[in-house]
Length: 338
Image (cartoon, rainbow, N blue to C red; front, side, top):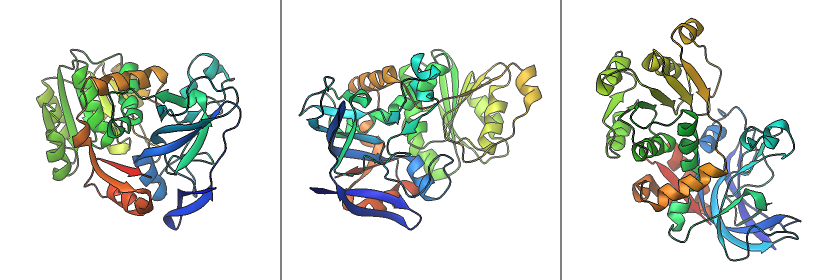
C-alpha cells in the first residue's frame, strides 16, 4: 500500500508517493490528521537551518490517530488521538539517563533529521514519543501542543516569570505563544519587539503591554521605558546578532536572556558585560514530557487563543503553498491536513 508524503529538497517542496510504513516492535503506526509548518521548515528550505540538510521529509508538529501497534506496545491503543514529541533520543547516554533526553548526545529528530516526517498520510514512531490528546482539545488545538511546549520549557529554564518583567524578541508563532504562556504564569509586564509594522499590529491583538519597533535606533530604551525597568527575562525568539545584542542590553544588569530561536549562524557576545553585570545567557532546547503535559493543560484551560494563532489550513497536496504561506509573514501558524 502506498501513501503521499512531503519531501523538501533543493528543488523546493514536493509531494511524492511512498510505501506505508509498518510498525516494528515497540512502534506505533499513526494516521496523520494535522501537521504544522514550523519556522525551522521554512529556514531549512531556504538553506538557513544549521542542523537540517536537504532533502528531508518534514513534519514534527504532528497529531493523528493510532492506526496499528507493533509487538510490545502498551502506551497507546488503536483509535486513540495522539500527538508526537519529535526528538528521538538514544535513551542510553549520560543526558538520557539523567532525564534530559532533549539534549541526548546522539539525538535525532523526527521530521528534521530522520527518514520519516509527519507531513505524510502515515508514519511510524516509538511508543515513547507519543502523548494522548485530551478529549477537550480539537485537532486545531492539538496542532499547537508541540510548539506551545517550547515556551513552557523556556520559561521553566528562566526560573519562571511570575511578577517579573519580560521582553520577547520576535513575534512569530513561538514569540506569540511565549507571550500567552508568560501572561498565564503571571508576568508583571510583557513587551514585544518586531521589525515590521504589520507584525507589531498583529501581535498587539494578543495583549502585550507594549510593542516596539525592533529596528528603531532607541529600541532598547523604548522597551525599558515600557517595562518601567530593565527586563528580568528576555526571550530571544529570533536568535541572530541584532537580537542577542538587544537582549543583553535589555537584561543588563542581573537579568537572564533565554535563546529560544534556532540561530542561523554564530554570534559574538560582550563577554566582559556578561561577567561584570552577572547576566545569564541560557539556551533552551525543545522540551521534555512534562512540558507537553503542561502545554495540554494550558490549551485545555483556554490560556491560548487557538483560533487566532492558526491562520492557514491546506490539504497535503498544497504543501508548497503552505510553506509559502508560512514564509510570507502574513500568517502565524500554518497547518497541513492530509
